[in-house]
Image (cartoon, rainbow, N blue to C red; front, top):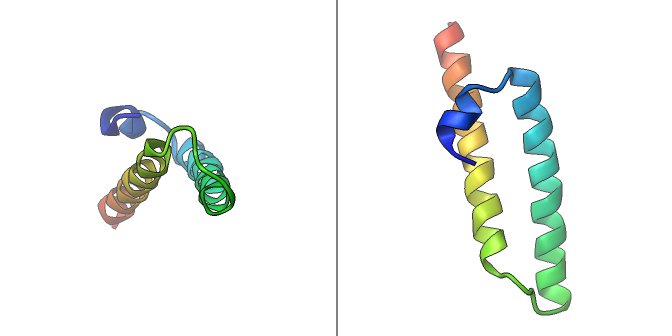
Length: 65
């Protein structure tokens, strides 16, 4: 998901997306410890998506002040 797509989402949608992405990232980390992942790049993609969401939330917070 691109940053431009995140900017178009509401704050509630961003929060829900963040929650689901963090859960997915946690499951992937646990799976990587127990067994080999089919697509190891998913860890990196999830980590970057979490960072993008948090960045957008922070920007909105700063713009609101």
